[in-house]
Image 1 (cartoon, one colour):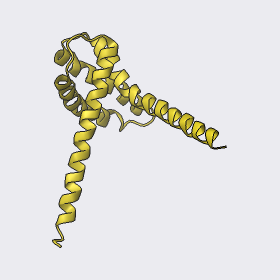
Image 2 (tube, rainbow, N blue to C red):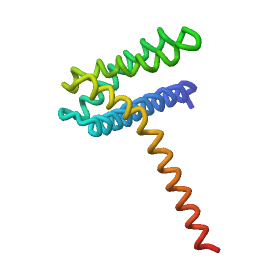
Image 3 (tube, rainbow, N blue to C red):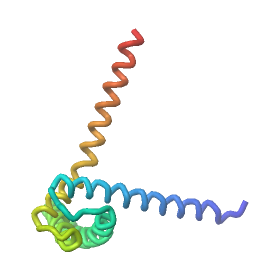
Length: 132
């Protein structure tokens, strides 16, 4: 076996995970845009917003997280604002709706995960209820 093949496998796996993250994040942003009431929404616009907003958010967080204590919170807050500013022209919407969609896109995945975990626990409990 060629010793370089595992390296290529790791690179391919990282690329696949990055694409999966991009599409799942875009889906949650699209869901947040729907809940925020943005009319001109599409999956392509959501992917573009995730790419550009992610770069902008990363730059802002890199600047603000270097400050101790306050920097992490300010980096998160300004990251939302910068991502909403990027989203405003792409989705052709207001800043408030874009900010609401970004916050919803950030909050929906953990809420969905908790809901699915509770559903799994309920089904697991119901399964053992019928076994006894």
